[in-house]
Length: 270
Ligand code: ATP
Ligand code: ATP
Ligand code: MG
Ligand code: MG
Ligand code: MG
Ligand code: MG
Image (cartoon, rainbow, N blue to C red; front, top):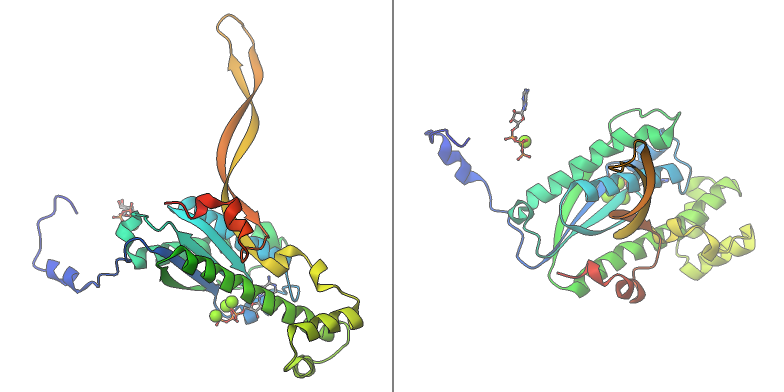
């Protein structure tokens, strides 16, 4: 406290480790649901992709971006989300533990808080948890490669899961049999199974499943009606006014190629 005199116990503070993030680096916090294999089964997630769960994750990530400072972009898939803090942020003196714990706790409390908006009649059976980690990237290229890595992971897993669950749900294979059938197959083989056995063109699967979700800040022009009272008129009048707000917007686009970064140059700006 401010006015408090130093006590003889004060020295214990010196035991705290300095975890200041290196200046000028992008700070990435990634969180991941704890044992969501079990959590998704117990809460009857639709396999391989439950829209409610994906949308709830994104709702929580939007809350994190709006509540915390200096997050330039976020990317999510499955039970994970990555948050990228601006490379020159001064928030909490760049202390790693502050970034990580604020992100993860805000996300976890939001998950419980917004659960019923997405899962309606599916009750939340126990409190979910999330782990967090923090990684620093010194160059823009490193950061782009990090996000590309997560999106490539989304693609690989989703292609596998899409075929796997088709074999289980449509062809009646046991999970073990489906796993065995897919062992050693390449992407082309999986596309071929989907096409020839299930008449599914993988490229027509929803973008949210194939690409994950990118959250960016966008200026939105909102037209709102305001009631104003003009000096010489007795009645209140309704007028339309345009105001510009910055909102967190979800996209399901490719972030591996250059096009995304050309379209959103402000993400990498100082
Ligand atoms: P920061 O985000 O920096 O921690 P803070 O507002 O949480 O900001 P703290 O130093 O953690 O600041 O102080 C916690 C505040 O919460 C205190 O000012 C206190 O008034 C209030 N508070 C916490 N617990 C209680 C409680 N049980 N009853 C009344 N007030 C409480
Ligand atoms: P850990 O605690 O090590 O992260 P985990 O069980 O959460 O263990 P992950 O590798 O994170 O393992 O995998 C997440 C699991 O959650 C996947 O098995 C996936 O089936 C399930 N899952 C996550 N999101 C969804 C979703 N939207 N729809 C269906 N299943 C999902
Ligand atoms: Mg994990
Ligand atoms: Mg997990
Ligand atoms: Mg995961
Ligand atoms: Mg406090």
